[in-house]
Image (cartoon, rainbow, N blue to C red):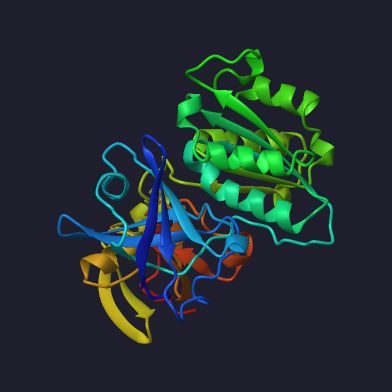
Length: 356
């Protein structure tokens, strides 16, 4: 299992009134640990009001910058995001897991690709990393960014995006959509919908000429764009998306399994850090992660919504059913990797290994 490392806050910059960019010093000797791919994220941990709190935030720096920077937007009742925006200061120390995530495609300087990106709000943070990295490393590739915000003043990384556009004028285009401020072109007023997507792909971007799509933002926006592209017969392997959260309920057994497994328990064995622990778990009760935390296990987690993949582990023995699995790629599912925050045991014995 990956271990937490201490990071010192090097700089904090306000990019909008409710979003900060937090840069970290990379500890000497940990350069390899914190090497990352464009589009990946950090899982940060802090003690807030006496409680240990973990959250994942996308890196909005590029690997070519030799910098470690995340964007943290304050959300209502968000414990960590409020702390970062109102209390965190330069010189403070946070803990972090090594960079993680699958929201990227490999850079190849020899190829020429056309990329289309859809982002809303803080969904720009991993997108900026992706765009900057590919533009610099793939001199013949192009990007079109469709970016939705409420107003001009709420555009995260606005200056950085404009600088990129000026640097790569022939290869990078930005189309800003505003939901609470009028634009002169009607297309760019309001949220994306089916009609707007139809216009975009008839007048601005040709579906047949785009090699890869990146989508990041609210769940509804992501699935709107994804489903539209699938209806246009775009290969699903070309559609890459990153969720920051999900509206899905906590995982639960279907009616048939709930009746069949009612009153039964599972003996769960967890392997992490070379050690193992065991506990009993009622089938249809808590997911494996919550049950383990309730049994004093020290495990990594962040969103608990099947999105961030921080609680990923390998199912060595037994069977589980999961709710959502957005954080896993198909090859990981095929190789018995699970998200423990979504996993409910359906056999009397389950063995889960966080070290594999």
